[in-house]
Length: 321
Image (cartoon, rainbow, N blue to C red; front, side):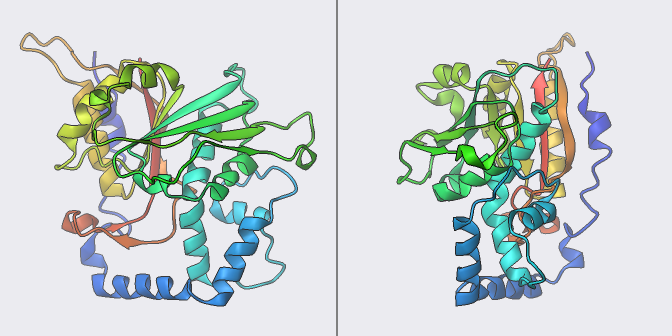
């Protein structure tokens, strides 16, 4: 059975946009990043972000991208907000907003699909997102319009933040119309900190695979040379569950490599030509994530054409048929 990815990969041109270092002066980019970091130390930036964080919306937000979300979440009323503050705010909200976006695509609010009453999500290799303060995960509560009564997050992997405790984020029932209120709480489980880099080597991997309804990999880099051989057994294990797998990539080039890796895994054959890989169905086609961080960073470990990266630049989801 022929794999589906070649038709998808050909539509991804990582050479477009800002992904080529030939088109960007890295020194200028480093200067911009330094200026952004310095601007966040100002009292103006601290005040804006504090007010934003501590002022919940009065109703569910349905913005289709970060700018619409921001306009609904925190109307400017004519106030001009520094671009550096907006970029930093997008970096702080990209994890919960990207997850909310993925859930809305997998389980549309007006869909005939009957989801479970609670949604359990296993975040694999969640080093960066594990350090995000719990208060920012409220943005998932504010934006998600699915039919779940609760969303449970379990983060697992090496290098996770050690200060995450068992915590529930609840919604104020007065915010929403009772007929449309959803995702009444988010339950963040304690981080599963382990020295085991690979899920398939985790002592409780069978329980985790059964527990989760959805698997989430933020910027895994599964197609990069140093990581592809490490990720392959884990991806194959996830495919065997026939559950949705949501991934992001930090650049078009990173997305291109990931899709190539998935195509290879789904096209593996034995000496007699028998397909060994699991045929894959795209649940969310690869595309630019409307809730990506707008804060550019430089990854010195990347190849020359992809050193400029943004967290959750692209998003896609797939499942084994």
